[in-house]
View 1 (cartoon, one colour):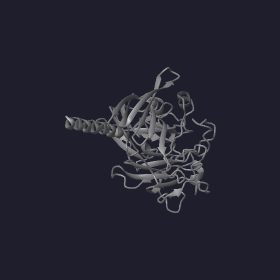
View 2 (cartoon, helix red, strand yellow):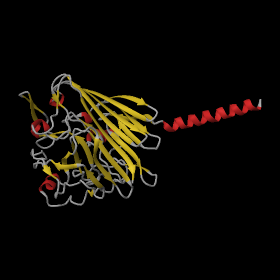
View 3 (tube, rainbow, N blue to C red):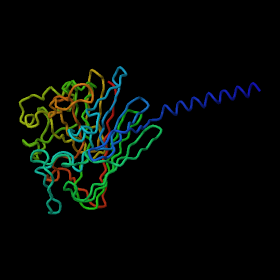
Amino acid sequence: MKNIYFLLLLFLISSCENIKNNNMSLVTIEKQAFGKTVDGNEVHQYILKNKKGMEISIINYGGIITSWKAMDRDGIYQDIVLGFDNIYDYETKNPYFGALIGRYGNRIAKGKFSIDNKNYTLATNNDVNHLHGGNKGFDKVIWDVDEILGDSSASLVLKYMSSDMEEGYPGNLNVKVIYTLNNNDELSVTYEADTDKTTIVNLTQHSYFNLSGDFNQDISNHDLKINADSFLPVDSTLIPTGEIRDVIETPFDFLQPKKVGRDIEKNNEQINYGNGYDHCWVLNNYGDGVRFVASAYDDISGRLLEVYSDQPGIQFYSGNFLDGSLKSKYDGNYDFRSGFCLETQNFPNSPNENSFPSPLLKPGEKYLSETIFRFSIK
């Protein structure tokens, strides 16, 4: 009888240990109310959390990442992306904080392009040019959401159908974006789309990072590396000229890690046009699938962000248009260069530059792209 009790006790201990280990391997998704839009649409926030403690909060309005809590070298978790704590500010004041961007990320010259000799005109919502999908791009729509919970990853599947001629773009475009957080502190963003009429597509993610976790500090002391031998010079309206220029001996050389602020105030025509960096780099090894494209490091917190992507370009934006007028979700305001963006994408104005990778998507084809944001401590 004692042996039976002993074996039963061992079984119970083993079962409890297995339950504990299984729980430790799980990530979680929590759904919360985030308010209503001015049109009365309910907005929900989904909090993805992995076993290490990383938390990423995403709302179904614009697919916006509202918060991203990452650990520093002392084990302290802090939010490292700019944003707001309410839906009203995202609707009325948002400079694309954390948003999904489409149909076409970045700029299109004068809002015009043609497909098969047919001309299309888009909104000019960035001075004389079209920017980030127009007046109501994918950053301003309500996405349908599905949750997928696995043992070692959690996914949020966002779906949206952009109707023919929405914002001036041809074709009914079915879009799916999948955010997946795993237990290795990686967030993968997978983009899919198909169309019933030839159109242009260029999707990206527009989070503003500040790896220090202190939004009252600017990002000048972050070390940035971009795996690109060349970049795209722009004109005074920030449209690429069509030239592909070598980065060597220019402020745009980030082939080795360099402080963002080291060359950002130099008297350089390109720097002057952007009031800092707001340019697309021509990434090395395009066509090799998902590969390392960039990294950013904050030596005070020890947070290292690495970016992997299959895209041909990356737009590095150093927060040059933040001016202190937007209130932070914590204390203070978002001042000049308090955040930076690393937007993996096709080249700006690709529909009008034959030498750039084509942004065309035809019926029967599928748009597929993936970008991975990987965090670690150094």
